[in-house]
Length: 284
Ligand SMILES: Nc1ncnc2c1ncn2[C@@H]1O[C@H](COP(=O)(O)OP(=O)(O)OP(=O)(O)O)[C@@H](O)[C@H]1O
Ligand SMILES: CC(C)(CO)[C@@H](O)C(=O)[O-]
Ligand code: BAL
Image 1 (cartoon, rainbow, N blue to C red):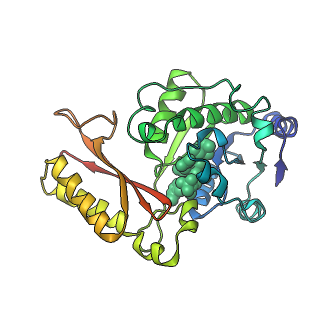
Image 2: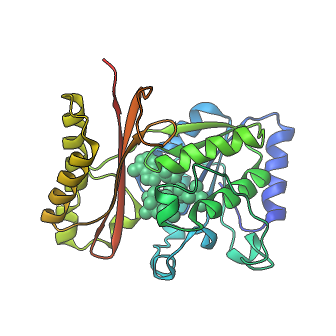
């Protein structure tokens, strides 16, 4: 496995794959890898001859300085895991390599609509930061396919729009959320939960399952569902940040035409913000 931490050595490795006629699959990450990331890597392997992973904690997408400062960084262990998965190339740039003129002077990519609502409204600048770094990483790696987790539902929806709008010749593959045995969606931020918080954390997925079952049984009063879910989360010790029930495609309020709805949850447990989502069919 080759590890590149600058652009010249990354491009050289990519060029050698291309000269050999290999298909390239790409998995962008922020590191602190877990089974969710490794599932993306295995999916990537099914689509290409070469698998490239990036590990970059992207300062441009953090709206809270404390979140960036405490984001877990475990590069050595990450590289060992990726080596075990047979990854061909890991790109681990520093912020100075990615943004040599600083964050304020960086050209950015903005996807209108999808990136401003919901999570985008709560985390100003977040999706612009994601769109910018993913575009830059795509230009560097030039993959045929790229894998992203469905856990970050709005991120994947926005990136699909970006790829379509900019006619990028890259196929995006969404990978279902990998969960712990108790239902908690795996996330690097789970490591920051105290043991007691970790015991409470699966309640987020349980409340989501409760909302889904209510909808499947015919409940259509979205506001009542939101209010009851908020009460359940608060009673368990969460501070709910967002409980949204929206059309799974447009991410707008569900209408007569909506085929399916997505439940998007975000809630604080202590200082850790957890997210989860579930798609529910509205038609029999
Ligand atoms: N549990 C999971 N199942 C499937 N994919 C996942 C899971 N967790 C993260 N991913 C995906 O892995 C990629 C890299 O995500 P990232 O490095 O931010 O990990 P993370 O665990 O989501 O971290 P964070 O704590 O920041 O949410 C993204 O495409 C993300 O959607
Ligand atoms: C796609 C990504 C690696 C861009 O920094 C990040 O948003 C993530 O880990 O989901
Ligand atoms: N996995 C999404 C990246 C973020 O929350 O910043």
